[in-house]
Image (cartoon, rainbow, N blue to C red; front, side, top):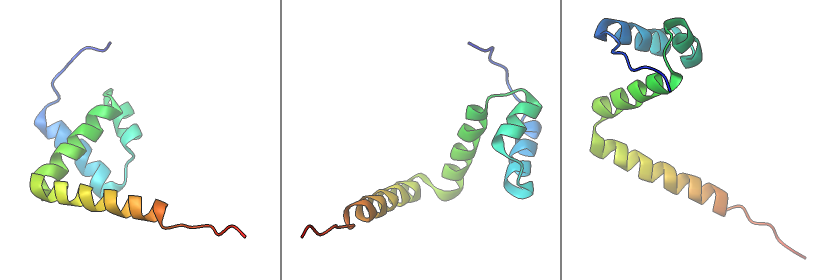
Length: 80
């Protein structure tokens, strides 16, 4: 298990900016800064929830679940 360190806010913002604006992959940013890609995905998820709002994220999740469920269940094959 790795050691837990606190990433300065400025570095975190720089990493997220590069991913969102410059198209740097999460894996590459994680490797460059010596942190877990899971940490960066957590930051991205946390940031998107703050920007969108918790209720809106819940609505989107329900909609995505419904669309996924509908897409997988509307395909029918006829047996002759």
